[in-house]
Image 1 (cartoon, protein in one colour):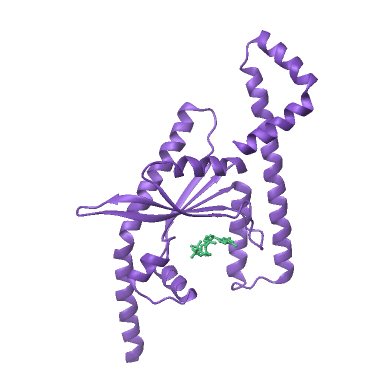
Image 2 (cartoon, helix red, strand yellow):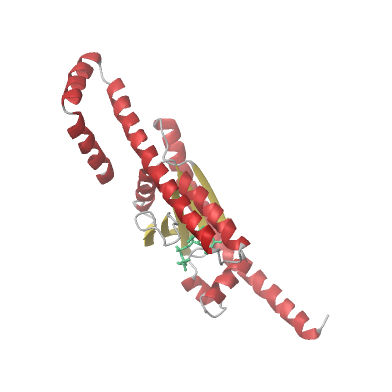
Length: 249
Ligand code: 0O2
């Protein structure tokens, strides 16, 4: 092997090993955060008849991917710079059935005493120009080590199944075309994102109607008759109120 290439390889291996050691604390933060999310998921499973959390996955950014991001952002390759600028070394993705669940989950996590929210990017209310929708939060969780406590950042991506389906397809196409998607495909992806958003809206409406029916079936029959008559007489006003009520809560 030619000497400079060997030297570079040795350097690269040393750097990769250092990054792996550095990333351990992020793995602990993932464990802490996954425990929190699992507790919420289990609580919903045992106590309520519906859980806003459908699926959870987590990953640690690989040393190669960290180095690529540093290069992309034109940053120097030091651990100090990584610590300060790369906040998605630990990442968790939560998928849910309905768009309103996204904010329910985000609030349940954000209000925990030891969780600090550093940043929120709401690509659900403000989708990216390519159609990408998801709620991103950078939060810190405390990790207690033998000699210190560290507040470690974790990126949470919360989205519906439809948003997730779209994002994974777009991600595959993005890399297949080496990050420059042909215009025709970009247009089709945009249309697919709009269809996914329309599907989310329809599913949310059906979910809301089912909630109303469930409320009715849990009432005793005398209450039910009174309420049913009131509902029939004021159907449009009640529906409008419920739609408003749900988005505000
Ligand atoms: P990977 O491989 O998922 O880790 P920042 O992290 O804030 O410095 P950025 O990219 O502005 O940089 O942050 P943002 O917008 O919060 O995006 C972070 C992550 O969201 C990305 O991580 C992707 O996982 C996902 N994401 C953002 N935009 C898109 C998109 O248009 N399509 C898809 N499929 N995913 C997206 P990484 O580091 O880019 O990659």
